[in-house]
Length: 112
Length: 114
Image (cartoon, rainbow over all chains, first blue to last red):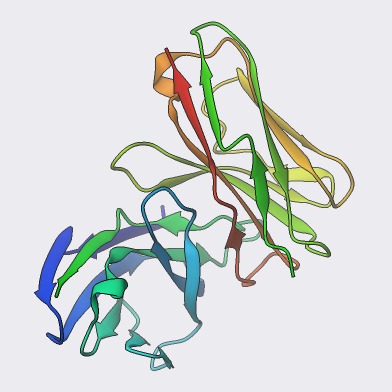
């Protein structure tokens, strides 16, 4: 069964203090790994898709990387508006496996 | 363009009542998904539609849950005889085709069963 584990559960940083969020996964063939941001009371907002080990994607202060067992979301010089819960999800390659399997999320707080 | 929309945004019901939740996907998206998010927990897959057929219903927790979709348009998730454990945020997502495509989420419907 496909599984995703995110760590830490919660992370509190000062503005400008860079850090990384971890997403460890087991999947029977990876079709894609997805990162989302979720603000309180809202639906998940898409950030990145990674398809193969070694792939990296960047957007503003965020950079996502992928290995065969885990993905990292690096946050450089974060601002208070980066505070949110960050969700990682995988989609497996088994025929008909269209669903995303999500981790529990990392709740990130950036203090000014 | 318009994103995924869901209605109502909030629904409070009494135990034992039936509820219907609605999802309007992004225009042109053939794949549609329902997920459930209980308080403090991750998203759980419920059902997947490709067009108006549902090839994967494996996440529906009981036969009280059902869903249908009209063509490649609106979908409704129905929960019969609601129980308190059904309280959660129900999220709908759509994607262009399916496999490997990004799933775009709506704002969700918060269901509270008293």
